[in-house]
Amino acid sequence: MAPGIPAAMERPHFIGIGGAGMSGIAKILAQRGAKVAGSDAKESATAESLRALGATVHIGHAAGHLADDASCVVVSSAIRADNPELLRANELSIPVVHRSDALASLMNGLRAIAVAGTHGKTTTTSMLAVALSSLSLSPSYAIGGDLEGPGTNATHGEGDIFVAEADESDRSFQKYDPEVAIVLNVELDHHANYASMDEIYDSFETFVGKVVPGGTLVISADQAGAVELTRRVRDLSDLKVVTYGSAENADVRVHKVTPRGLTSEVTVLLNGKFLTFTVSVPGSHYAHNAVAALAAGVALGIPAHNLASAIGSYTGVKRRLQLKGEAAGVQVIDSYAHHPTEMTADLEAMRGAAADARILVVFQPHLFSRTQELGTEMGQALTLADASVVLDIYPAREDPIPGITSALIIDAAKQAGAEVTAVHDQADVPAAVAGMAKPGDLVLTMGAGDVTDLGPRILDHLSSGR
Image 1: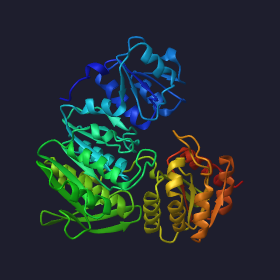
Image 2 (image 1 turned 90 degrees about the vertical axis):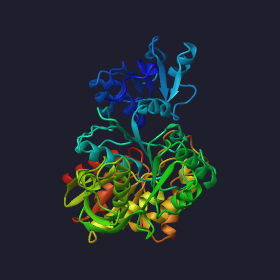
Image 3 (image 1 turned 135 degrees about the vertical axis):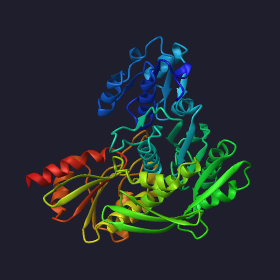
Image 4 (image 1 turned 90 degrees about the horizontal axis):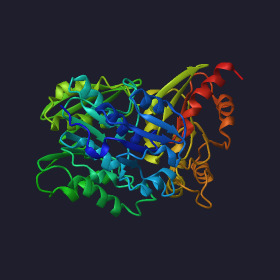
């Protein structure tokens, strides 16, 4: 039986309760019986799902939304110091708890798997959650995206395993004490918080150092940053290191990945034996995520053949190459990719899955700081598309940086030979895409912001023939 409610979490108030990370913690607490409340900037399906679990969700931020008897106020790094509910919490001397500390408290007493890396965390965490659930192990999980099957990003399970996406962006993953840590890759990102690769490595070393004595690190044998991190942590005492990937020296070696349309067949060499299973999403990078999930489950003592079969029951996460529909012979697919490596991986996956199709991209850059540092690489990634529409930067939590606009990406893409069009008003995107698309084409809406809302509107425009 999973632990109950931490004392400080009996009556929590979440500022920004609709966020991917915050809502997951709130859902688990509500399912455990806590009196959950919170606020969010706008109404959403997530807010409704929280209300269905008994939570009180206010729309908009106001001091009056915070109950005087709240046991704590939960915040993420995106919450600003002048938020009225945070100011009210300070007036009332209500403890303020960071999201990562709240999540860490939910893992106490459980066998935790923490999934880290610059890319692929949500997919890998989801694969584990689905596979363990299909094996009737009833895990708890907290993920940065909604699973296609259960339709949720978090649940309280009755088993003793907790699978969590571990966020490196603000160093919050350093709060966890997992039995198994997965590191998929290590690259420079989140430029507002990290100034160099050395800072990134230091942060990941701290994360790995929190693995419980006798625990396991599952880490890529292929990606350069992961290989360097492995070198740095090899001498940690009481840590078992299991590498996975295509490299000849990988402990769990990816022998072959065979595309099967929008799925892949993966063969791995594990403990001297070949094992073949299906991954229900296309692309080599998703296949490698599945192998990382397999290695982590085996580290917990789950039989490999059972786990491999169970991973085949994973059907995807919303926004991770999610098919939104088809109209006028054109398929519209949603991609969360917002870093050049992710963009390249998803575009290559689409090329492999539909080699004869033209690929059209609607790309929305995410964050001014990321665009400032990686805009050129984003533009170069768009050369893998047949044509692209680039929107204005989605600011999220950031203020504008003078001189940093989508033009950085567009100029780099054009210099690299890509066909790119700038569209500043999202209302103009459906018509622009419909004017470009032909039967048999694939359209990818790509980015971590509200570009995802454009998929249905593009489909409507294609259907109406306007």
